[in-house]
Length: 139
Image 1 (cartoon, rainbow, N blue to C red):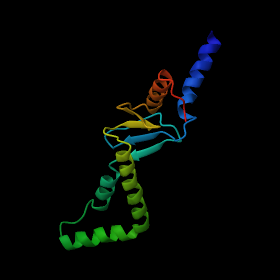
Image 2 (cartoon, helix red, strand yellow):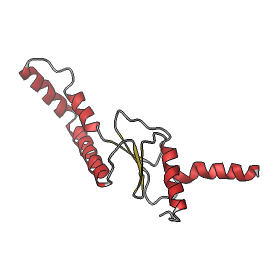
Image 3 (cartoon, one colour):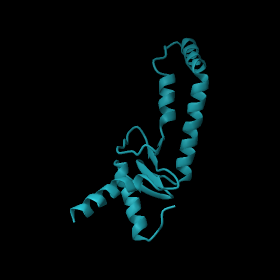
Image 4 (cartoon, one colour):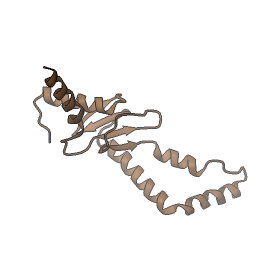
């Protein structure tokens, strides 16, 4: 009996993070952190664009001309990296929207979503349990 529980608990620990056609998608913002995120998860931070803007425009001088020069300097210094980061951030927002995510934190696997669970491993377990209850096979 102990062996069964040991094997069962090992399977429950590993099962949610392997075997899916797509890795879990975790949608968060800076006010909603998560933990127990599998290494194969895709994490979408919805407010990363706002954070980037705050970094670019932080501590600008009160003089409009100086502020413009400083902001332009910051933008051109890391233009390629900033452009790539913004493209990824915007695509992530579009992806979260297209998945139908309406709240954060959210964990999405194979068109199933769990809202409000900060423990990603637990959210994955909930999706797995739902699929098993409804005799749905893993993709």
